[in-house]
Length: 416
Ligand SMILES: [Zn+2]
Image (cartoon, rainbow, N blue to C red; front, side):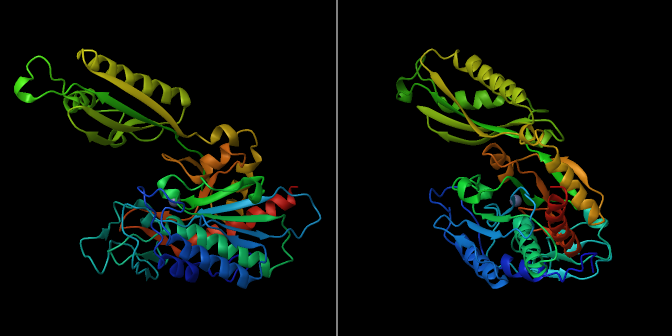
């Protein structure tokens, strides 16, 4: 029982939502990338209507928009709460069979359908501090999808509470559920005008009490190497094999730094993600990450320099070097209005949790929304070990996230 006296529904919702397969697909060119994501969108629309929300819709792209109308005379900025409905393409999300381990008493959790899948206490330090909690896991054969259906369920639960409790004053609240976040397309088709929100919060963070105000800044680099192909029997002093040139470039990347596997905290990296081609030409794709744009540019310069040095040894070969912007660190935007983070920290405090400010070694829908005019930090949803069969979430953490969302609505009204 919380101070707000919430009759929580987030767990039942969560169990319903994770059973709906909403895996997105990197290779698809449609929006949404998979039609099945709309199965969850339709369920959410029906449940929002059932709560009594009239302004609710989903569209051909699979987005869900809904409004909780203002019930105050004050002019409060329109808030948007956002979570994504899709799950990662990395691990199957079909036939998810969630298991609730009531009153966790410590120790490893062995998943029943595949005993090699073990959530080890020493590898999941947060699990250790969840003694007495109810922990939801998979049966070991799929991912759970707490990333981000925990967030979806929490926003739905908060919406239900606000609708049922008109005595709790708040401004206009917009709800946004997106498809395709996991494939980097979560906000491609968002209609910002229709959304009409002024401040956003994604509910897609991990640890209890965390608010994330920083993401990576991200670019992609494509290097195309054009070699010189000729019949191998007549190739002496002529053939310039693009496959070998490409490998030579990769071999020049440092072994002990600048990669995802050798960095942490605020360090960025240069990360080759695909290598395709034949003797004549090769295409290598990289993702570049850093918290500072200067750091990104520096890394791109370094990569270009290596490429130049290698390719210039081959007189018939040349290369193209294409940089594309993916997203930018949202801190730049959020720093302009410190209230957005302050109120989030306050909302967590009021839920009885110690708030902590974090940065994400990745991006969120919010990093792009922030640059599209909707400043949008990320608040914890309680999800852990996502994109894996060992994914887990604590019921009590989910409930704290629901409280935090409600508190945020109240705080914005109070302080407006
Ligand atoms: Zn997520």
